[in-house]
Picture 1: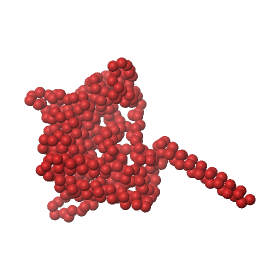
Picture 2 (picture 1 turned 60 degrees about the horizontal axis):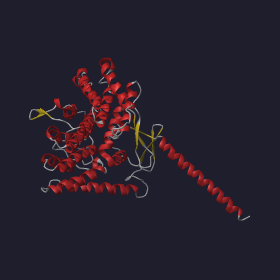
Picture 3 (picture 1 turned 60 degrees about the vertical axis):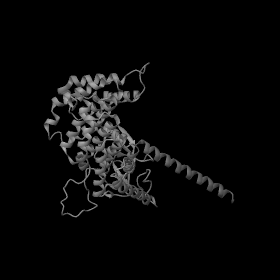
Picture 4 (picture 1 turned 135 degrees about the vertical axis):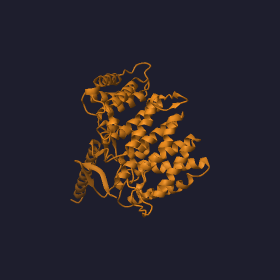
Length: 436
């Protein structure tokens, strides 16, 4: 565990000090700051312990309330080693039961979000199997997202196959993508491929399971979410794609990319933007190259240029209009031989740290996780740094560095100090002159 280590970096080196991360919970390590921080963590752990029991209740309203409390506690961040094995198991079993019942869509959506948040909280967990004769060590990493994937995948994939409830389907595909994203640290190729196949069945229904012998139709809202989720999981495959040639065969990826390229002509801007990001990642990862797919990439570049220059005329919807133009401008520059745009978000409430992504892979990860975690993004980022945990949100993925905003803040502080010194000098001179 690493405490009292600042997230701020200068010239690539982390600066250590007695102060912790600036944020809602971790404002200061001095005085009672850390005491208050741990009090909040203990309160969340108490919620988890209560939920582990109430999530198994027979009354649906009780289970739903318990799941809502569970989601709130996990969004606020709980260190992985604070959640014991038995507690993890009870929570996962309860969530799976709520997903399986399916009678109440809201209960199932909460359970899906809860298991994904638990996966982010726990990380991949221990890779070794604990024998029955071994003594449980509460400080040792226990079952993590790999266990969650094994328990939830059959239930989630079933929802993706047959459900017509759009909010439930989106909750399912986002949960599946997040769990797979964390689980990849265990290098489980089978889990990742199964996840991508399930998501692709929504993106291209003709390749997915048939309902009553007919391929299902995917609404634009669900389609955009499915493409984004599929792309998130795609970003994790670089480590093992070389180990399995079939997974990265040129013909297979050419067909995949061609379908994604067709989505650039969708009537939905959200679908077009999701497809654009997916193609950018595919090309960046060299799964699609100009040498073997020159015509296809040229077509993507031409369409990206059109979308980047779409005119705002009468009858043109305003939703995501500016965002689409900016995205496809960046994609056009990238395809012309440039670099991916740098994207960053604040990593502390006082702007002293910034999370910076400079590849399409990291940009997709950053954007997806920010959307999924919502208000829980900053607490999770700060908490994992503070606790010295291996975090899929940072470390392996992103670089935290001090940027211009942080430098501006330092300049303002220094300017204020200079003004204070000058005022003190003036005051001293006046005070001295009164005694002359």
